[in-house]
Length: 344
Ligand code: UT7
Image (cartoon, rainbow, N blue to C red; front, side, top):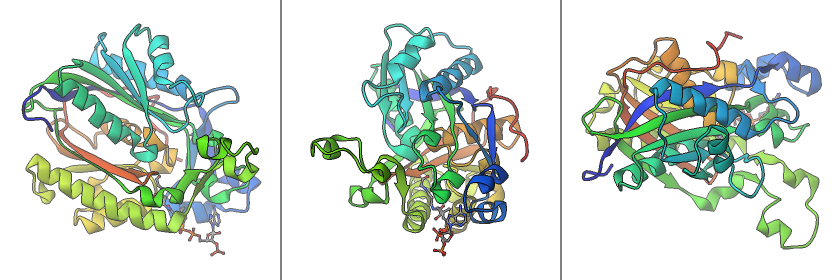
């Protein structure tokens, strides 16, 4: 983090989920899968999905408004939206989200880093605050992967869910609770094909040939991605704790991208921390991509697992490949979620 400019302080937290619940039993009725397979391999019991005609911006607006309310803030200099499922390929979705929130003429842009998107967006917003370009920022993670999954792909359809979460950042002091104290981001583009939507971009469109149907959907090589996720999230969390000046065993909570309950357990094992320091809501929401970390934060804050004064490291990993993490002392705030997430 910058030692010279203002620090970025988390002052509000909000989240939103579409009301439609898709259980494992629902999926088992349509695909060659079982509740037992999904629970034991991923920890997921249910996920939320948008209704026909809804889009990522609809969720982002709801989460953003809740984060502003949580912060009791009405000024926003920049809206940074992390998403890989924008409403349209062009333009970015953030300006429409800002407009619909009543934030007229603010800077607004999307960040594309798949499941690491929220961490990248936090880092970008913190940089704008440190440079003096912005005094406040709304950082939203929102995705609707239900719109890009192949209908017959039992693996991806078992994992992903839709949702949105947001934090409000304001300029402040590095010594305040809520100030971002350490940040680490990385990528490995040589493995981009492990997580991709192959068609729909300039590479395919410039051929002049229509896309193969299968290439228009999201695809993931589960096993190698699993190994990479554990390796990079564990290393990144360690690096960020070190940058914050914290010994790993003094970190109270590690809030990771909710990719798979077995990944959370493996990272806990690698960094040698007890599993109860890793709050998780994956059983109720699945993998919500860029929304995953702020949704998990909202859940943990609402159920008392996250409290003011705790040392917290957030960690993400996703397509690109990309990864990153952020350290902060948890601030005294009231998160505003859709409702307490019910047990499945
Ligand atoms: O969000 C960012 C990045 N994403 C991740 O971090 C995800 C990382 N990967 C994973 O979480 C796991 O690899 C998966 C959950 C995707 C898959 O679990 P796995 O234990 O690695 O299973 P697998 O891919 O090795 O497949 C094992 C078997 C296969 O059958 P065969 O070939 O052994 O007969 C799959 O076809 O499980 C089968 N399978 C399923 N069976 C029932 C795959 N999906 C399903 C399913 N239901 N939904």
